[in-house]
Image (tube, rainbow, N blue to C red; front, side, top):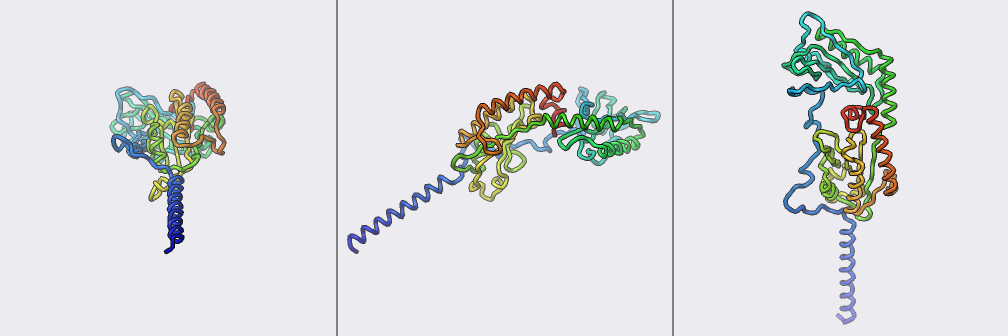
Length: 346
């Protein structure tokens, strides 16, 4: 082989090596960013999770009676309430009898429906519990929620269910006037619709995409825990059992992929349900801080749902409007994060 042929062969090899190296470098640059090993053990985001419905105690489930009397869950501010007076000589109904007479479902149309008994031992209204004695009952249906206002059909279903319960325990219900309650429901629904704020930020990748593990690792460092739904993480409230302060979500298909490390995520969403979170949690301020921290760490930008960059001035304006909304809700006795607000804006 001549010197020229040898030189060309060497040059060709160098070019080939350069092409391979460039391809490998490009592949690494464009591959989704991966989570790094955490020092000091295996406390991965997957080891923490959002509380599920099974972890919570619901208003419709029997609970162990505390020594202190509990308030009724129902409130005339957002509920239609019918009194149910006992008939007969004893005027006492056992918890077992009340439970047996309860309707199969706890809804009237799209509205929550509940029956409570007055416990003669604790002197408190509660969902009937076996082993207790009750001297009266009340039945309620919610005036409005995010499905809309209580209508005449739902009110009629509420009456039918309440009457059936009363008949089963030998009692007589007394209902508020339907047209007045439906009108009250519409007014409450109008107020709620005008003051129902749900905020969303989007963090978009500038260059390299992110793997699910990379997103989860960076969110976990800011206090988020894994949600019950794939592609969802939550920032828990300071009080256990309450709605999360913030929700972070990304493509659920990427979270469910056979090899999540190869899934490419280019944007994640931060969500704040204003009425569900107590203003003392400072949810909007924390939302801003989280968005900025994630954008800086993950090389992203913070935008609205339409891809427009969110400036500090824009966020300041949103924050000022939120303070006015919080004040309005409090003046209506529907403070953000309160039980009534959580029920109404649900």
